[in-house]
Length: 347
Ligand code: SAH
Image (tube, rainbow, N blue to C red; front, side):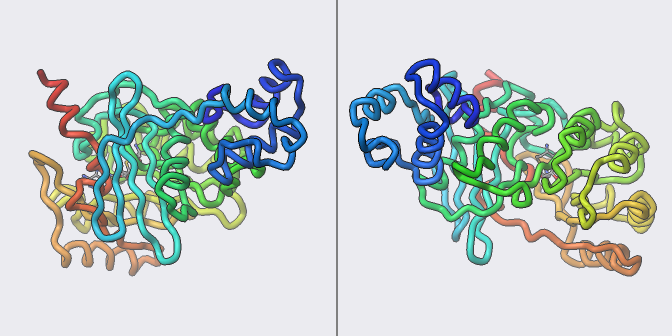
């Protein structure tokens, strides 16, 4: 039983079929494995009277953690690279906050969205990660590295909504209250604006999940120029999807806006952004562009970021400037895209 790939109801069914045991024991397994990182079931009260059974199940229970082949540290920030059974590598970043950590997880190896400024896009899509591979990143950071993880952001490699079913399954596993017990409110899904996926997510009616939209321009031609997804779902379609999305009463969208020097940082760009956001409840994240390897764009100066910030702020928009962390490690936004893997692919 590959437990990292099983929701509690699925584990319950397997346990019934294989061992004729019920939810009581399934919950105990979920608690030991996910909450405590413990696979020795003989320690659990529920198995005290049935040591033989505990051992049988333990032999069957795989906590399939794939090897971490690289680990880098900068200040308190950790980036680790996991290698899959089929020899692909994907990256996870653990980011220090005040008293806890935020984990940035990957959902795909590579990405097919093709954003011009993004390092991961240059890989193309190699494959979707399974729910177990997504959950495994959090399990590893929490139980192997011992990080106190409070928030999960789906902002690593890949487009989460392009791997919809595994994304949702991973959230179900992580939020199971008998297990790790994350809250929807501590989870952010970041999307390029994949409208079909946004609608599907809306249909689940998960009002507490945070949704971040990578906007980067509110002018169609410019957005299409750097984000091919805009040719399929233009700003009007994106806006319509956001308008009909079931946000909770006090809910807001997080709008990510990378400032690229000379491309989307003029006063006209700011005005278009204000116009686009005027009837949406949002918080804007201004992210200075992180230059990648062989990048064709430039990062804005500190003053340019501030000027753009002022233009939005004057109009009453809630704006925060994201301080890039982990630039030295290529662990910052949009810099996840294993260089070695890319070189291998070129050959
Ligand atoms: N595919 C999803 C999630 C991954 S990217 C999405 O697009 O939202 C996470 C964030 O990093 C996105 O806002 C993305 O646009 C941003 N990003 C990508 N490349 C970047 C770069 N070079 N500099 C700064 N931010 C970047």
